[in-house]
Image (cartoon, rainbow over all chains, first blue to last red; front, side):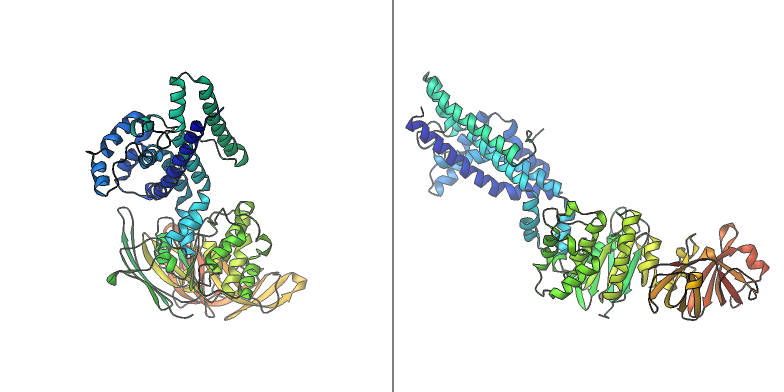
Length: 228
Length: 359
């Protein structure tokens, strides 16, 4: 059975993933829109930076974040001066790391969806008196709905599954940073295979249910890895 | 509305230059005619504000939409225009009604329900309101797109080759609607096309564009018969006369129509007496005689005066004639011109072998 500690990690995981997904959509949408529309020479650089977590080992990303957000890191000094303390080994730090880690899984489907909309629909909206912002919400968002759905699900599930970054930046603090993937690792380390089975099974069932809903109920095209 | 349109644009891309300075009438259909690459679509997009010419001045119905001198450039969504794209460009996530509502929701001065109903009837789309765009034929889609633009009660209607993506049958389905629009709309329409057929059928005013410049512009009849404009030289050169139906000769399956200066016999037309029509007379169907032919099978023989002559390569000449107040073109051989000693001012008779009715 799931112990109450296991339930706590499940709850914490969903809290981190929900909050991170919300933030990623908030930040990723304008970023993806800019990447889809711009002819700026910065586009390649920004694309590369956003996509970096796709190819970087999570421990490497986690290591740099730990250094940067630590007391002597650039970000750490900044948050310290703001009176926020340092972010590593806190819930907030975990969310920030998750946002950076999973961002490409949100930005890339959105960018692809925005690119496929094409200039004509936007021009049609402009000739029908819709301002650019109005056009975004009344034309782009409805047309890019599959992209938003894919981005949300990929961003959320990818955050749920993160392990390497969490270990580096968040550690293993109950109720603060101990997420499901870390808890499964703890169980296995302690040779508690039964408990590990329960948690792993929960994640497997959850992931499968999400994908099943995606492909059958919502009839979304299979999600390939965004880079492929 | 009678205020003329002023449109001046200068735009310089590495491979394309647009440089026009036009005064266009504030009513009727003005056709921007030219081959691909002539700049006609770019000109229309500049007028819509979809493209910004660095140097430009645009005044529509007394409102200045662009004046680069004072850095004024009204974005497209603030211009009181209707735009019909080559592809209908309907929003795929909205029904026909939703597409029509899209613009209506965003304008302050809503049209009367009656006006809206009138537009739906005019374009024959009342029965399509609940459909999604992907359940419409190409012709239906384009009619919805036209209705969507007109519903906003715009000050100008811009149409960018609205028939180009349709096959012949669909074109024939829409052209009558456009002709009808022509008679009921009191706003100016700028219509881009490379089809001479659409020019003949729809244009009141014609602007001929070539290489980003306006080669000539003026009333249709004048433009069609101007010998210094390439249209008169082309194989399909023609004159277009406005006529009124005056008599049906049922025994002969003929219809008589009157123009300013005489009458013509045409194959039977299914329309009521008094109907206004356009007759197209191809230059290749017109021959010239010095005296009234006594015995001829050709019904339409009219007195005319030669007002222009050109030599053409290949032994052909284009002759411009005046019949009543109308201009007419004839393509005849250079040899005939010399044998008959045709000169400007010569009084002749024209025999018209064939005509076609345009609407």
